Figure (cartoon, rainbow, N blue to C red):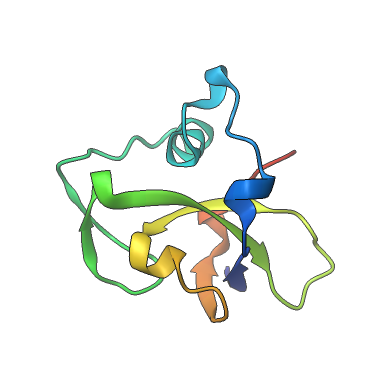
Amino acid sequence: MNISTKNINGSSGISPKPKADNGSCWREFWEIRKGQKLNPFAFYVCPVCGRNVLGMNFFGCHVKKVRSLDNKWYIVPMCQSCNNKHDEEFILDENLLVPVNN
């Protein structure tokens, strides 16, 4: 199911890095939780802009659902350019979302 989402402004200063068993960065946190390792030298489609991006250039980005009672924060892999879109809403496949806290 597709859902409207938005980046969380300033999340890197608020949300601590994942604990060691969950990866060393938010992209690795997402990979571990989803059981999907991104090859750093393969191209993947950014779920926001649709561009082909090398796996090493994907970031684990904090997003929240828009117009939802769900106030959780989620991690989604996306390119750096899309990670910097702070005021735009974008549609994502809900299956990509990994909750920061269960």
